[in-house]
Length: 183
Image (cartoon, rainbow, N blue to C red; front, side, top):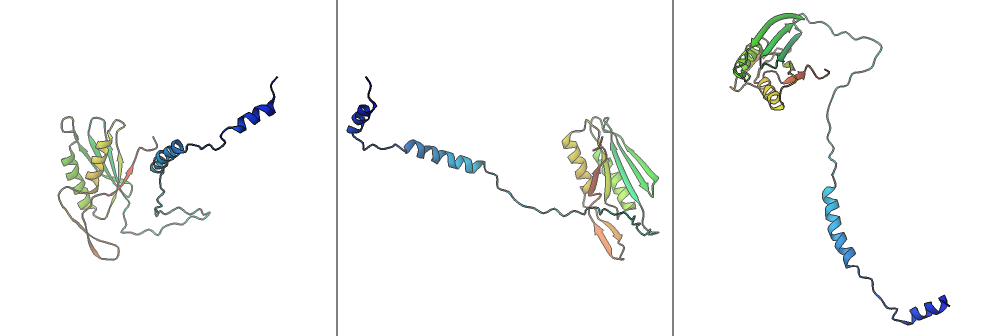
């Protein structure tokens, strides 16, 4: 019959001085710690300054300046690579320009010339609304943004600001809003 007490005594009579081999555990740690450190993302804090609307029950009306104009430049890009520029001033259509495609490509040189003409008429204005076609590639949109921001040739536009200071600018329309984001 099996006797547990005898079995334990037989086992304890042997060499009780045994060692645990920790080298596999150390090898695992040496490999695992650098891998985990490499996969860790370190947070970087940045501050983005924005103006938020204030919730109020009262309506604040801006004083209307007789010299201030309400300028709106709308640029629509069709799938046929034609570009349409629509200039609204004080909510009235002032100018409409169609830039036809050059073969299968956009005619960016003519587009830039038309933008320069508009900027020369309205040098203070910096806003434009771009409505690209649904099939327009990302690279084409970036190219349009580059053309809208700054002309290739270093052209400067001179104007007088509200304080009467004479200023120069090398940019066309750097504040670009996409017109079809909500569609």
